[in-house]
Image 1 (cartoon, rainbow, N blue to C red):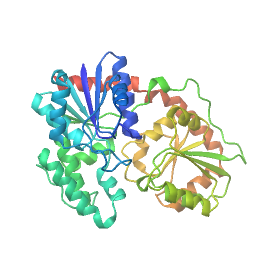
Image 2: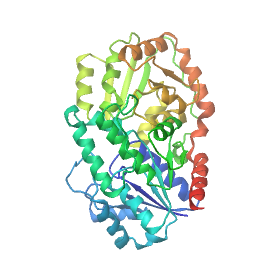
Image 3: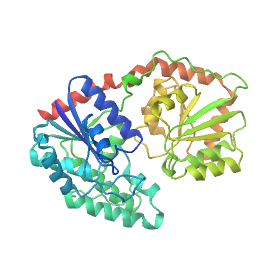
Length: 409
């Protein structure tokens, strides 16, 4: 098959969507499929663009300065559609348009698929309602959500309107973001989500297009051969690793607050950056916490750090639909810690500790319990190692191809 990926979250970014796209692209190409990626990006030299083109990765027309160094923003979808047809006329002969976000480049992929009568598969990765709430100041949330909704409806019809309720759309801003997500999904021929719990939420708010659950996978070429069982001995320092964004939605500050109440010996290594990076560094220094901030590093260096850890953490709450952090830990047999009950779906039963709620007090309580009973680390690690091959993308990609064939037929 010839498959075109469209995403506004890929070039010049890190994170779960990027990891997911890279793993799937490699797995599909290993099976003989032809894969192109079209993505928004920051300005690049002609040499850089040529190097990307050699990997069948192409940057669509993007804004040069808007949100520079935050998130690349595409030009208007109609501009991208015209550019694609002019620069890549071969796109008319593709079998599947595979879309991974809900902004300009992704909108263009869905619209062009309709025009060319090419089946479109939309992956709903994340909770945009929570993303908007965490990243936008309170006084501007309704204004921003209204503007995003308005822009989106210019290109994709909003036949379904989500009203404010007492469930997930408990503000006008959240209701508008759910309206955007639901109508975007309904414009595709097939919808994929990484988890059952997110699938249920989308259906609840009005997604009528058929939805399939397709969890993310770990790349085979980076899968460790024989990682050892992790063990924490009495009086040994608990090595904790954080490799999510250092930002409000990932809840770094509540986790640091929890560490102020931890009684035993620990060390937290933080990899990655984000809006709370310098605030977190100041907090850790002020409270004399044993935390080291490494910033952004290469993936190969990161996985070596994961392999040396006793515990991997993902303490977001009601935000993540599927924690790539968790399966990266599973690949190395590292137990995980989270607060969100939804994350129990991602890793094997018995391989994690979960705080009683999302508060700093309960997170500290869970960590203190682990330090009091360190033998839990070995027990959880053994379960992780027993199940870890299940997360390989080569195992999961067969299901994706099956979904592609279903939508083609």
